Length: 395
Image (tube, rainbow, N blue to C red; front, side, top):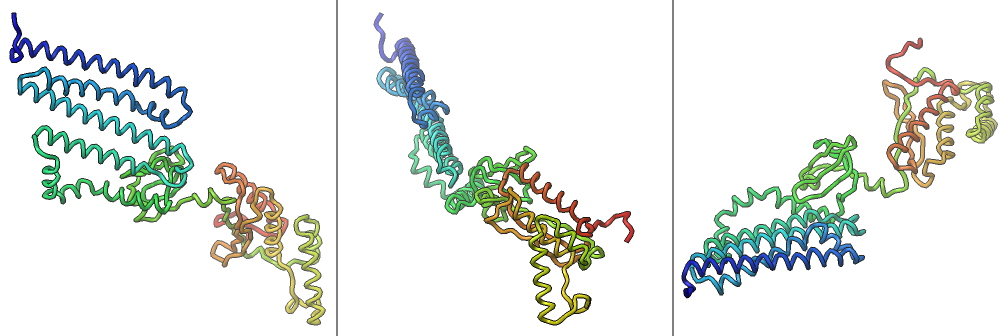
C-alpha cells in the first residue's frame, strides 16, 4: 500500500519520527550539557561556570534542541497546513519559554559571580538583574503574542502607546525602584550587609538584598522587614556603615549626679584623692596651679570667698577622663572626652563621649557596661550621689 504525504497515516508516522528525533536530541544534549559539562565545571577553577551549573543554565538550555528539531522537521515532513502551523507555533513558544528560563539562570549566575567579588561591597546589582529578567519576560511575551496572532511585534509595540497610562500605573513601583536603584548604586547609599535603621518600617538590622522594588532587612530579632526601594532615597535612613569601616564604635552616655552632693574639696579629700593612681598627677598639678594663683593674687587659702578650690565633680570628671585614656579597649586616636552638660531636673549630667575599639555588638555592650559599672561604684569615693527620681535616701 502506497502512503501519500497528505494521508493521515503518513502524517502520524511523520509525527512519530519528529517526536522520536526530538526525544533523541534531548537525550544527546543532556549527555553533553548536563553530563560532560558537569565534569568540566567541577574541574574548572572559574567561579562563573560553577554559578551556571548551580542555577541549572545547562539543564535548561538543552530543551531548546528538541524544539528546534520539531520546528525544522515539521516543515519537511508535515503536509497538513493546520498541523504544521500548530507544531511550528508550539515549537516557537516553547523555545521562547526555554530562552526566558535560560536567560534567568544566566542572570542569576552573573549576580552570584558578582556578589562573590569585591565589587559587591561597593554597589549591589540585584535591582539591575531583576530589571533584566523583567525585560526578557516582556520581550518574550510580545513575541509569543505576535506569534499567536500572526502580527509583527513592532505593530504590538505601536499599540502600547494607547495604554501607556495603565502600564505606568501597573509598573509604578518597578519604575521608581529602578530609578532608585541607579541612585543607590551610583552614590553607594546602601549595600548588602550594611546595618541600617528605618523606624517607620520597623527596620533595624543587616540588609539582605537590595531588589528592584523592595529591600529586605533582617532585624536583630531575626525578623525580616521589607522596605520599598525608592524609600531609601526619599526618606531618612541611618546607615551604620561609617561606624563599621571606622576605628571604633561610639560610646555616648551620661551619669546624672545629685546637685546636692556637689561640694568643694577640703585638704583631707585632696589627700585621699592623691592616693588614686589615675589622678595623682592631676591633683599635684592643680595644687601647684592654685598655690601660684593665690600667691600672685595675694589671696589667703582660708579665704573661702575669693580663693579658687577644686570640686568633687571636677575631680571626678578628671578621673573619668584619665580612666578612659588608660583603658585598653578605647580608641585613643578618636574623640575622647568627659563633659558636663547643662543641669536638668534630673541633676547634673556628666557625659562620656569616646569610641570603643571593639565594634562587635556583644563585646561593645560588655565594655560599655563595665566602664559605667566602675564609674557608678566610684561615686561614693568622691562624695557624690547619682540622681534617681524615686529614692528612700533622705536629703
